[in-house]
Image (cartoon, rainbow, N blue to C red; front, side, top):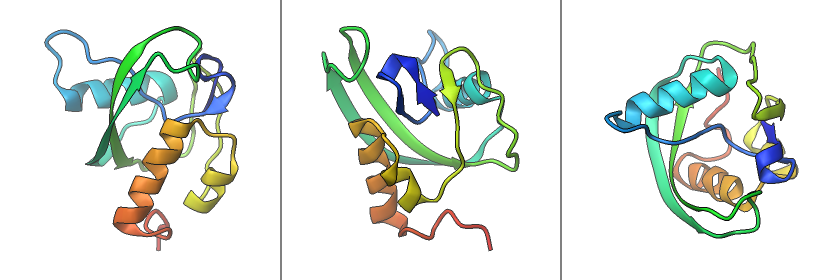
Length: 121
């Protein structure tokens, strides 16, 4: 999805873990809040650290826990964080104006699974 918070670039939906919440619960909640999608087959991909990078609209220190997951739905309803969304292949995703952290996550997924791994057969 494209986000104002990330200077209009495309990013993977996500957010903060709330006090007392598991990582899995936070992931499911954030995806539901930002896209209205239910997810499953959650797979950990990588950790990335972000320290005061100008890619975000505020001075922040983030630790990204990046995951891949699946959904059976295509009808996205964005919350106020998202400007628009697209469903694209991995190759096409890297052609979009994505932030560097999203690019790293996509490339990590490709290195583990290959470019065609997301295609439904």
